[in-house]
Image 1: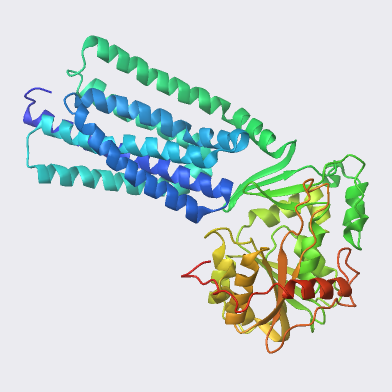
Image 2: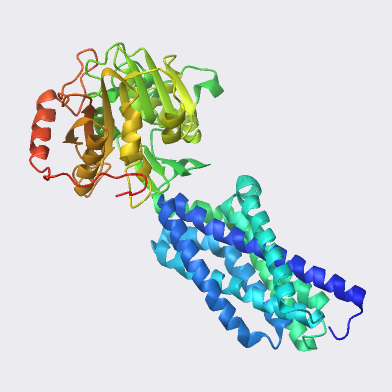
Length: 542
């Protein structure tokens, strides 16, 4: 842009700053898409956030250094960077999702895409600074201040647009593709209109063609997003899907289960295995036809419940804790699938159950899907049940009511690295124990192996005596490899070590007897290290 008039120079400068604003917003959206998808698919948002942020910042530094070699033709270089960034960033979500489903190399792909996107974002600022100086020579400090201000404000807009606009309205994949299109248009506008004197006729034609090709690829990917997503889910989950729900905590997927007829739609009575499972009595009434795949519930890609074997874990979590549960007030933390709630309601002495779950999508799915509703015994329809949507840890901290419970059950995810560690910290156990009535019991899950004794140490630090016992492993229908025990449960109480027993007022469990509980607890106690390892805390998760 040789010798522009003062008015045109001001306009050109404003447009370059606007391009910096738009590009910064797009860059932060790409970054948040990678973080969110990692948390959804792998269920470990702490690790995914750390990996994406650290690799992204490092790559941005590399991109800034590399941009020094292209400042002799800043407009053309900026257009090429934005086209590449639009293509890579726009397709990043579909690429990661496909790798997760088909290749199983999610972490490698995540790091590679993060590094490439970071380098392209890092190259933007040096090239934009060179363009500003070409418009009008000015003090470098003032130019940098204006450019970084536009960049940071754009990042603010992109950061707010992602959770409040793009994600709820468009979803992960389409939101990223739309962001890529905006990115490509912004880069083309700067070069092909504002700095159209720099590229030669041939270069300008190639840039127009490249920009158009990027937009065409993004449009084609948008049209195919649904088909790609369905094929990837089918490949990963290995069969037809019953339900797919994108919730605040990740992707909820139901597969398998008994074919059903919705009685509310046909106006008739529900019959067959679903109706049998919904009838009063133990869940053994559900007898699916031979060859029917078991109902499976996946949370963020992980198997959370398998219909033929889930009772093993939920019976172990619930029944020992409810033995002699006073006047039957129960607090269930988590348990949005209704499966632990089903076991609670089998106790005739239970008079009220308060369910505190952070994700309203899971209880809604448990009510809406006939197979999952039948597996849970239509527990959420019981008038004794009250559901509160809140994260269990803040709810325990903020709800300072006087209500106490005869049993507190933590049907919450097991810790993995730093993910979900807040539900296994001594502070959490202390808050949960404070809600126990005199003689009440607390039941919490724990992983097998060394993590079990970390949980035991956390309970002890909270002033509770605990007894651990293993949960029987899954059967061959849900675990063909026969991986053994699923997890462990720790039964805890104030003042004295609780005695393992089963309540006489509930139908007998299918997987437990008092003798089995005592024998397995005795065998596990022999493995307890002395002293116990340090407990996990909010500041020092273990």
